[in-house]
Image 1: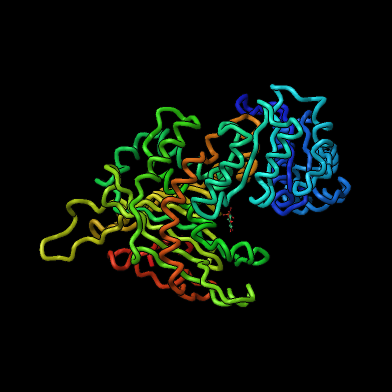
Image 2 (image 1 turned 30 degrees about the horizontal axis):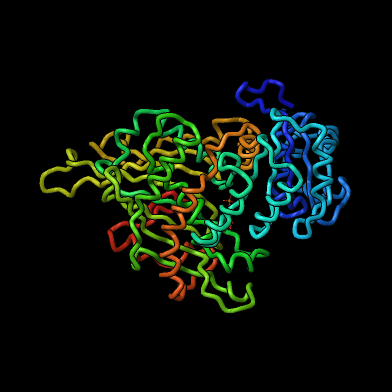
Length: 485
Ligand code: BG6
C-alpha cells in the first residue's frame, strides 16, 4: 500500500523461517505482524515466509488461523482480499519435527536455491526453550548455520541464571552472539523507543535527569487479563520471572542508563548492562507480592506463585543514589496500563506562600510516559488559575498524545522487531550479559519471596494495599484516574 517508504525502512529480501509455525506466538503475533509489514511495503514479493510445523496443514487452513488477528487491517480498509491473497503466496508450510530430527533436509532443499550472504535467513524459534538446543543442532546438521543466518529466541530466557547460562551455551555452540536475537517485545513498543528519543534527542530533560531534581520514578505494567490458558506455564514462572526480570527491568534501564556515545547495538546494550550491574540487592520489606483471588481455582491446585509484584529498586551509582525506582506489575488488575512516571522534586522555596497563611499547595512536576494504551507523554506543571482572586495555583499539563499526533496507527512491537531482524540490527534485542545480569538481580529476590504466602487481592483492584511507598511518605500514581490516590 505504501510506495513511499523512507530509505531507512527498506529491508533486504529475506527468508523468515518460523519453527513452531502453528503455535500461538506465530499465529497471534508473528504472521499478523509480517502481514502488516507486507501491507506497508517493507516485505516484498521477494521474501519467503516458511512456517514449519509437526503436522502440516494447507496454507489456506493456516491462513484462516491467523486471519482473525489481522482483521483490524481489513476493517480499517488498509487490506483487501487481493493483498491478502498476494501475501499468502509468500507462505510455504513445511513439516518439521525437532525432537525426532525430521524435516531438516527438506528445509535445506527449500532454501538452497536462494542461499546467499546478501539474503538473511532468519530462524525464529517460536518453540519451548527446551527445544532451542535441538533446533540449533538441526540447523547445523543441515548446513543452515551460515554467515547470513540469524536465530531468534523469545523470553523467558531461562528460569534462573543457571538455566539461562545453559540455554546460552546450547545456542552459542552453534551460532555467534552477533547472530542471536533475544526478543523482549517491550523494546519494540513505539513509546519505549520514544523514551530514548525523549532523553537523547532533546536537551531540556538531561540536566534534570538525576538525583538533584528527580524525587522518584514509578514504573507500572498493569494488566486486566488473568493467566487463562497459560496457567501451567505461568505458575512455574510468576510475575517476577514473567514480567520483572525482562520487561520492567528493561524499561528501568532505558530510564536510568547513561547516554551512549552512539545509538548502536553494542553501546546501547552496554549502558543498559551498567544499570543492571548497579542494582542493589533488595531487602525483604522492599518487595510485596500478591495473588489474585481464585487463581488457585483456575490452576486447579494450590500455589504460592505471585501474580502481582511491587518493589523498590535502588540503583547504586552517582546519578541515581537516593532516588527510589518503584516498579509494579500484576494480572487481573482494575485497568490495563503500562506507564513510567518521573516525579520531580518540589521547588526549593515557595514564593507564593504568604506570612501566616497556609503554604501554597505543592503539585510536583511529573513526566508521565504512557507506554500503552493511549500512547503519549504528559508533563504535569503548575499554572495560575485565570481571572481575579490573586495568585491561585492549579495543576495543569502539556499533553502529547501519539494517538492523536500521528494519524497512522502505531505498529505493533513485533512489526518493528521483525524488520530489525531483516536489517540485522540488534539494538532492541537483549545481549546475553544483560539477561544474565538481570537474573543475578532477580534470583535472590525469588528465593526470598517464595518462602512467603502472597497477599490475596480482588480482581479489578490495584493489587494488595501498598506498604512500600506509604512507609516513605509516597503513593502510587494511578494511571486510570490520572491523579494521586
Ligand atoms: C508477556 C508475558 O511477555 O508479556 C505475559 O509473558 C504478558 O504474561 C505480556 O501478558 C504483556 O505484553 P503486552 O504487550 O500485552 O503488555
